[in-house]
Image (tube, rainbow, N blue to C red; front, side, top):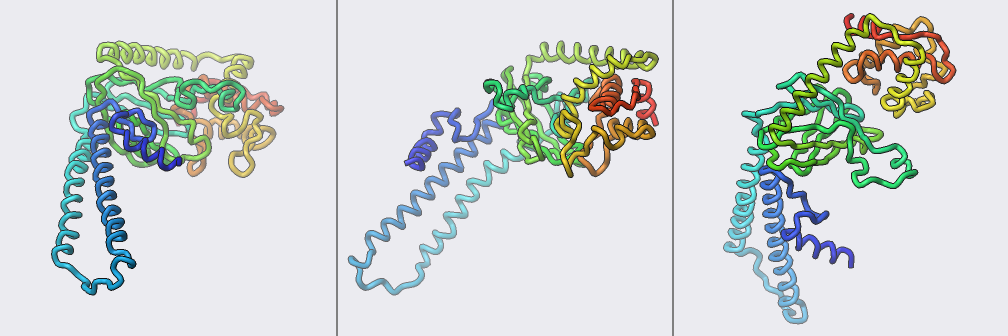
Length: 373
C-alpha cells in the first residue's frame, strides 16, 4: 500500500507546495519558474503514462488470444508511424521552450547590485563582499552533544551556523562560487540555487529575494567526512537594515585589524596562549587531529608526541604549515581563517599540550613574519 499512498501524495502536490515529496517552490521569481517548469514536465509525464499504459491495457483486453484466435498479419501503418514520430517531437519542443528560457534566466548574472564570493572549505563557508571590505567564515553551530545524541535535536539540527550570510531584499545578488580544497556545492532550495564549488574555478549564480526572512540550505556534494556539517544560512534584510548591518560589520572588522597590528608589539603570556589555543584547537582542528591530538591513523597525522609539534627545530615549519597549509593534502591554510592572535595561540597549544611540553611560545609577531615572507 505504501507506493499507492506515495502516488496519491504526488498527485496532490499542486495544492501543497510544502509537501515534502515535492520540489520546494521557493521565494524568488526564478525558483517559482523552476517549480512551474517542474510541475509542467510532471503533468506531461503523467499524461504520457496514462495514454501509453491505457493503450497497452486496451490492446491486451480487446486483442487477447481468447477473443482473437487469428492475429492480424500487417506489420506497419504509415499514419501511426507518422503520429508516433510527430507527437513526441511536439512534446519535446513544448518541454524545451520553457526549460531553455528558465535556464537562461538562472544563468543571467549581469547587472548585479551586490557581489559575494562564496568559498567552500572543509567544513565551512567563507563569504567575501566585493562592495565592502567585509569577509567572514560561517561554521556549523549545532552542539556536538546533539550530534552525539546526548542532547535532544534542535529544530534546525545541522542547519544552523554561527555567522549567517546576509543579503539585501529587492536587489540582485551575484555569487561567485569556488573552493579551496575539494568539491563542494552551495545549495539553497528556496532560491533554486545549487552551484558546484570547484577548486581553481569560479562558477556564477544569482538570486533576488523579495521578502525578508531566514533561508536554509547545505552543501549538496559528497565532500568528505562530515559532509553533512556544512549548512548554509542566508538572512535577507530590508535594504536600509542591510546597509546598517554591513556598515557596522565593516567598521568592526577594520577595528579588529588595527588591534591586531597593535598586538605585533605585545607578547601574550603562556596561560593566555594556552587558554585561547585550546578553544581554537577544539573548534578548528580537533575534527581532523582529534581532541587528544592522536589524529586518525593513515588519514590525519598525530600531533601528540610526534611530528613538527614536538621537534624543537621545526617551530618555523610548524607555523608555516598552519598558516599556509600543505598542498595536495587535507591540511588547509588557516592564515585567512584565523587572526594572528588565534594562530599564535593554537600553535603554542599544539606544541605544549598532551605532554608535548616543548616550552615554545608563539606570538603574533612570529605569525606576521611568516605571512610576510
